[in-house]
Length: 472
Image (cartoon, rainbow, N blue to C red; front, top):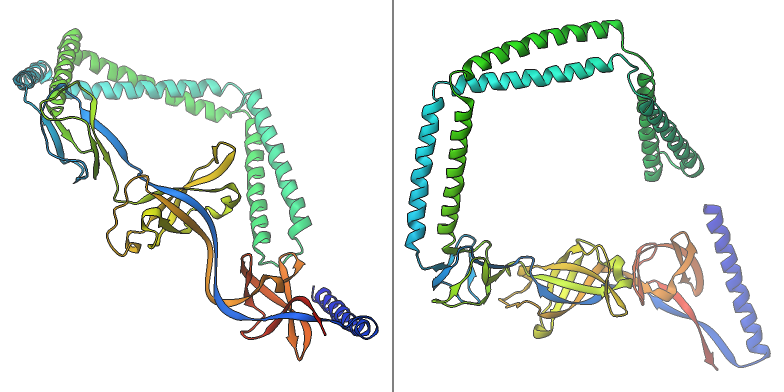
């Protein structure tokens, strides 16, 4: 690589010398026109890479709510523009005495049904519950053992699994081979600490593990259970069968004390009473309208004294505490719309104030409007950047600059000074003692006019940017 750069330098210097020589000869022999180098000095400055778009204020929480019970509105405690807290009462309906009576009736009914059921099973429920659980568990375990025992009569895996595991092994082996070939071709000669080589080695190790696992699974499936395994399983089944019989006998004895049909009947009565009480409670709770979120009252579409049906929305709440912008950029700037990137926002209504924020989400598909396609995302504004209270109503329009990169007080040269050498390498011609000299540089951010120099130049050095003609 060093020899390659040295050769480039020699060729460029010789070319420059030949150029100046022939220019001098041409100037003497032909026309009184002189070509001279156009230069610029290395300076310090700022460079910002931005993608411009438009946006509007939106909210991530915009909810319409209403009473779940029909009735006449008694009071509305809020007005449009009020900020309310989650759980705060917003409005209420006139109290219906019938709803209160129904609630008390259902509460008493549930207490009575629960007491009746308790009296029925008070002396049996604990023991019977324990015996029932143990019986069901033992029965389930016995079924599992019988299933396992049946499988011991055959090869450990069926033909379809053998073929599948063999295919898995061959696939894993093929992937490993491809990774090894890729490593030998691209990374084997690289430095041992090269990140891409390390990643390739990790991928090969992972692939080798998958090969080993697939081979072990395939080989295991080809074997048959041993006689010792079969004998041990038969013994386990016998023990579990005796356990099932014992728990079944105990459960039958306990159940004989109470008619099972009576138990089912009383259980059903308790469940029915609980359901009726829940309905009565919901009807009472439905007389009040509670804020489901903390937010701002955006709209109220009812007045006290108005009769409304259940589940009719009358209040709209939006969370404006987190200023969010819905932004649209040209699809060519999609690479600049990245979660975490900073953004600068100027609202049409406050054209002298710059708001800052960050991109918090990106729509996974482009948005089409007519024949124009946009990249779409959300920007969350930083309230501390406002400097003073601002009212940001929903759908307030703004201009948005998403900042893809920023470097301040850095070394800058005109973009024309760069000489690309390929593979991301650059050089410039530095004027030393009146002669352009090739020098390698490390380039950072670039825009349409300037390039950031990370290393290779100093402030005040003179670089060439082209050739200009002057008439003598």
